[in-house]
Image 1: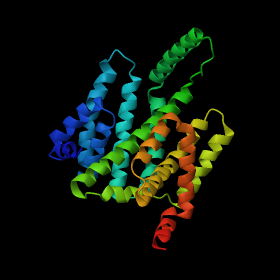
Image 2: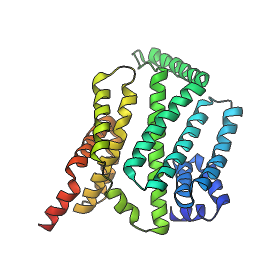
Image 3: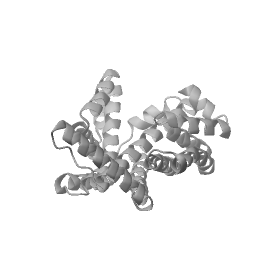
Length: 285
């Protein structure tokens, strides 16, 4: 990873090459935009973003497959550019988490309006596939709606952005401040105000249900990141070993909704109780 980060930082051409061809691998393109923006500023990050978006635009115009996937990829890159610049200016994870969530929602909603026909065509295709699978399986499969699809896209865009930002900050620390990102992420703690807002919206999404519950649950993402940060801190502070982190992330993959709720609750509790201070006091005593 260090070699890749060094190559990106050699110049604009190298960054653009990694950004374009990195689209073949998860998170490489968004992380490249994030690293360039964090280190060299918004203008340089914008230029790299344009070159990375260019093949996506060509794919949208000329590809025989559904163009909506190209649109979603482009939205994720734009959201990364916005969030990376916000983090470069503020260096505040609370602010960046809020921006990533809000801008992701706004960009996906704009996508639904500007590319309405493409979204409807893709959803109709998926509904036909689900209906066929339902008939073959002899059981009812969840019906996909346009609103549900866009909410799912928002989840994907926001998580893609945040993972890209984490990787970009890690690369930046590897090059210019070894070990700095670990300390930064371990100390990530949501402010009580942000936590209260996110928790209230999330609870509303869990209890009210309806067509917009998936949108309301997007507010749980900052809480989840806060929960992950405190778990990472405890593992390092107590010397439990990285195997516990591997188990946690495997659990997120296998039992996502349940573990996400638990980690979100932990992040909300930490914003009020500040577990790091308590752990530090216990260690001193």
